[in-house]
Image 1 (cartoon, rainbow, N blue to C red):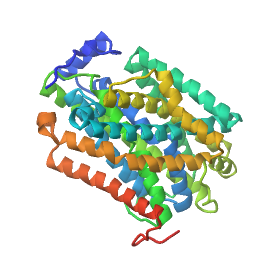
Image 2 (image 1 turned 135 degrees about the vertical axis):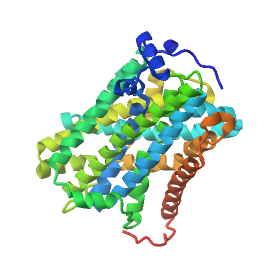
Image 3 (image 1 turned 45 degrees about the vertical axis):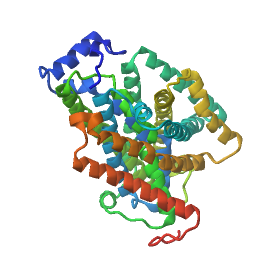
Length: 439
């Protein structure tokens, strides 16, 4: 097993924090205060699950189909929990992130192809995140969309500079923005008249009303289980609190799994809240609401200015935080696959270029958001399959290799994504889909 630096030598960790972590690993410290020492990686990764792409697809799902597609959100969130836990495990056990492991294990042509696809996915990710934040600023402050994009770029770059001060300031900043999103949608649920029995029923009852619902369902999967988050989580855990032996790593994995469940459960609840709010506000009489701008303007007369303002605040917090996380993951992917790194300002400039192009060409911003999520859903199987391959191998993971039940669950999750993508591809080429009606 690869040797690691002592925790006190890890960038961004104080001597006091390092000492506290050693006490936890030695079994001399327990309780919730111990858990908080390890909180951070899953919080950052979970932001990818509440980005503006989620807003766009969830609003469409709720407006068009009411509570019917809530089960898709639940399923996507469960799949996300499993793969984020596996990604964190890879980093903790091996001290390598997923992109680095791909470079080490796969033939060079495969590595370059994977890197290319991952970069396209990173740009599609940032398109949704960057545009979402800009739309929110534009609507809230009456700015032209272009200037909303400029402000978003400045704010995200300022937050990215926190990374130079270590991981803790960045984790706290992202955690605060997640708290803002959570609070906004908690208040939205209070304001909106949710049919709770119907919502509970559709969370556990799979239904697919038609081809259009399938397209939105695949968009939900693409917006929820994010390729860059799968890559990123392994990098966030690989050096954060290195274990010196298997006993340490077992303790680290226990805390990591708990954090994944809590952080992604919160993200999943936010996604369900978006669908339920959209359903309560739009499904009866405004089912054609499919754009973020329309949703905002329609919310004002239906639920009041307060609800509309909360919607925009949560959208801005989502866009800014997820854009920061997307840029971080883009840097990690490039460094891992090709051992090359560019300045953070250049990475920020490159990944936001497609968003400016979309606006310059006059493309509908919300439509671009939804299509970007479909692109991500097609890119997603690559890191999912790679992660499954590595975490099941004993020569890589040792005693922490996946158990048969974990392998089966991960294979089922990957199969669900692949099948949904295959149906969407058939639909794109007008191939009849058995059992699904058009409309």
